Image (cartoon, rainbow, N blue to C red; front, side, top):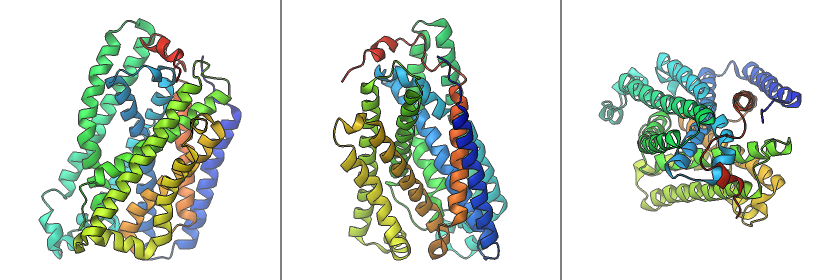
Length: 395
């Protein structure tokens, strides 16, 4: 069955982009005279580029995971995963653009290690300069993004070929490529988070940070996947997707929410308990200036999934899954905001028209791209070797 974008969906995504642009324009008009105006715009660009790029990357990871583990149940929702992963080229473009801006502006007071004047008067940054310098930063960034793109392009081409050729050769090639991707991703998902996010707090580091950002990426991706699947089911698409598939997506959302919460608490508790000055500075700044927002973000991302998705029935209920999903996405956007804006602007960071507007506009673009991706291939794979198993999936 071919997917066609409904006129309501086109109107909705366009409305998001227009409303987002309007809010952003109001924010620009209200804050143009601020001394950190440019820094604030660039920080918002980094937040939204990173957040939505991460969801596309998370979908690519989840697809590779299914290939590498030869999972059967997911075949019926495979094209949904591929559609979200298809945002990756756009996310890469956004990330490259914002990184170019940051490099030209010597870090825009966000990556202070890019500013020669700051480095010249900071011995700690000088000690990290062999790793944190513009040239090596760009080498790593290009390697990350090119590797992700190559794997995404390969999975996409083989998926479409499989519909035509059938057999198991393509499946086993995807199995091997999925395992290869997980090896690269296991390293790059951590090191890229150090480069793009943790280096904002250049004097601070955490060995759990890569896992923490990965968990946030994963749960955000699962929320998008389950909400997109429910949307398509509501429109009468995906007839082969049953309640058990929805249940599995709900379980993934529930499980990854707990994984993120566990890592948040582990990182916080270990650093706070050790009470080492160069480590607790990260939390002291956020708690002193963003106490309500910081702990509310954690409670939202932990309590809502735990209380509302505990039961079997809740994991199959479209209304509950959608409500929790929206809350989780907002919560994890706030997590990205606190990591990036609070780290770069400190007490001067705030959420206003500009932050809300840019997030809404990016969301509109993100949704529109995914809907367009769904039109480029049949919603159900034709010759996937586990399709029959997936159709008869019952738990």
